[in-house]
Amino acid sequence: MKSQTNKLREELLKLEEPQDRLKVLKNQYEGETAYVIAGGPSLKKYDSEFLNEFMADKLCMSIKQSYNLVKNVTDFHLLNFCNFAPYDWTDNNSIITWAIFEQFHPQMIFQNNLESDLFIPIFRNNPNTGGGVGPNKMIHSLAERGDWDTMKLDHTEYGFNQPWGPGIMYEMAIPLALYLGCKKIVYAKTAMGPREIKSVAAATKGIYYWLKEQGVEWEIVSDTNPGYEGIPRIEL
Image (tube, rainbow, N blue to C red; front, top):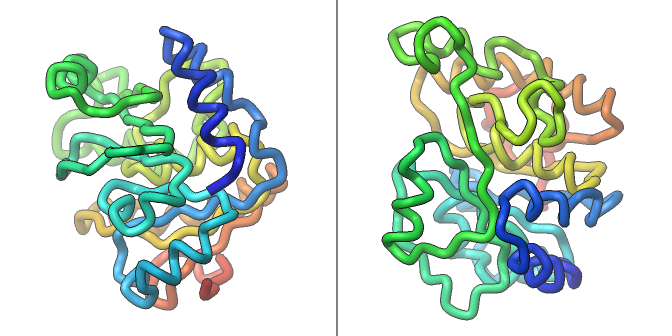
């Protein structure tokens, strides 16, 4: 966990609007490596003690339940309501960040007294079918469209809204790491449905080279990940 995270969280909680809170974070982790901890099978190679020691001085983004393994060293806890599970946020110092893709999600968060420091609105970017519903919705996803520039949190076309990934990695983790000023992203991939796996895996080549154009390295902690073979595979 980085030393500036607690102070930044205090600053953004003084603000009401999600857009203003996000602006507090712009380039605040300039040059850092973002470690995205997800619930994929590669995570089983590392016990909780090792992960907490390794992440003690690093920028750590935990996706959903992986937060339970590295709670005390997590800078950003990334969440949505897909397969939601309860979390113990007692003495929490992480910036709790939600993907919001339904109008009623903020109300659900407030009514259930869930921790929330930052919202990132997600929209299904298909103007012809009311948001991308239907059997062919994946063709309108970021992964299949490949319009990577729209992934940026400060992209002017969509403003504060993020295009549908699918998945937290494309909708939140990578965009947030770029916005924070990170120069490397290291992650272990989460599980998805069969069509999502095919689409997202196929898209990794494009996004890998797009990230290189942005001056950002991308590495995967896995020897079984189905993504582009040119992405370096590493061990922690």
